[in-house]
Amino acid sequence: MTSGQDGPHRIEVHLDAVLAERGMTLTELAERVGVTIANLSILKNGRAKAVRFSTMTAICEVLDCQPGDLLSYRPHPPDGVRPR
Image 1 (cartoon, helix red, strand yellow):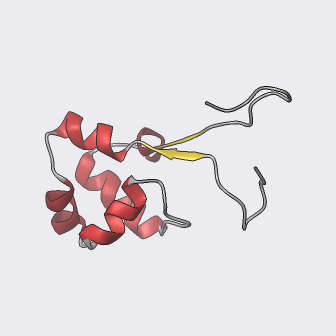
Image 2: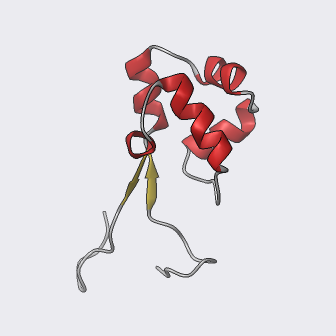
């Protein structure tokens, strides 16, 4: 696994969990944030390469959460340990 800008990232997205806690669907979030369901789906599934701060701000406002509630960093495993 590489760590350059072109390599895989290790940011995990917890949008599903936050939506479930709020009893909200992805469709409802998309409508309230003003983003397409397709773009939110890409974010939710961890395939996004970037997120605009304005989009993250709108998501946090609608979900009443902090960016850290939606994203976390998964560090490299120690040498010799295979990822699960």
